[in-house]
Image (tube, rainbow, N blue to C red; front, side, top):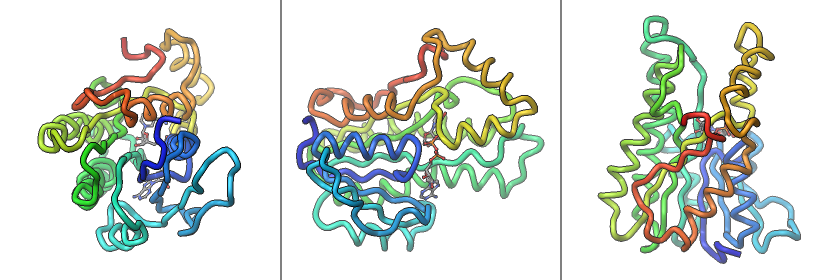
Amino acid sequence: MRLVDKVALITGGICGIGRAIAQLFAREGALVYTIDVSTAATNQNEPDDTQTPHAICNLRADVTNHESLMAALAGIHGRIDILVNNAGINTHPAALAETSVAEWNQVITGNLTSVYQVSHAVIPRMNVGGCILNIGSILGFRAAKSCSAYMSSKGGILALTKSMAIDCAPSLRVNCIAPGAVQTSMFAAYLSRCADPDAERQKILTGIPLARLGNPEDIAKAAVFLASDDADWITGTTLVIDGGDSI
Ligand SMILES: NC(=O)c1ccc[n+]([C@@H]2O[C@H](COP(=O)([O-])OP(=O)(O)OC[C@H]3O[C@@H](n4cnc5c(N)ncnc54)[C@H](O)[C@@H]3O)[C@@H](O)[C@H]2O)c1
């Protein structure tokens, strides 16, 4: 086990990529807290899982709301070793001309300002030698149609990761993971908005050299590596995990 007794906090940990990271961290020995706005976050430990030394505790909060976030953090006793800024949304896919100020602000707040807000609150509570992982996207450095706010928020995460890595060194390491297309509810929602979801899915698949879509576990395995001592001389970098899509 590579994260024995490390205390990890994962935002958006109830489903998708965050859920896979929470489960794999727990199997690697970490004491895992998640923060999620979903009502499935019950502010309690999950039932005992024989595969994990510690139960996962799911706290309910909105990472874009300061009071809500601080109330959830009060439920975590002691210091934190690993923070994963994973919570995100892709609710208003549109070109800039069709994006209202309110829609723009919702996506930037949900994906980028939330990373600032959670990190600002958690960094003073982190152990020296700890690390932060920000979940970006290949859409942070490559273009797609009708995606202006989401792309801007994810591009901001790549820059923020480098800024945080400099500012937090040598006490903390800060890295980013940039996933490609991963099969989660966010990806399913994207496909359902397309005129022909099957054709869009096939088009995305055709562009992936490794010939399959990603699973949340593909991202979780990389998150364990970057959070472990095996990555103790890695900071400020973005690890692209996309089956070769962005080559
Ligand atoms: N799925 C993909 O193809 C893909 C690709 C690249 C990047 N990403 C990124 O990975 C991250 C996870 O995405 P996913 O596909 O697992 O999405 P998802 O929608 O399946 O899960 C997101 C989770 O975040 C939570 N969440 C959203 N806003 C929140 C808030 N304000 N406060 C607290 N919790 C909140 C949701 O309740 C949900 O549990 C996101 O940052 C996303 O942008 C996903």
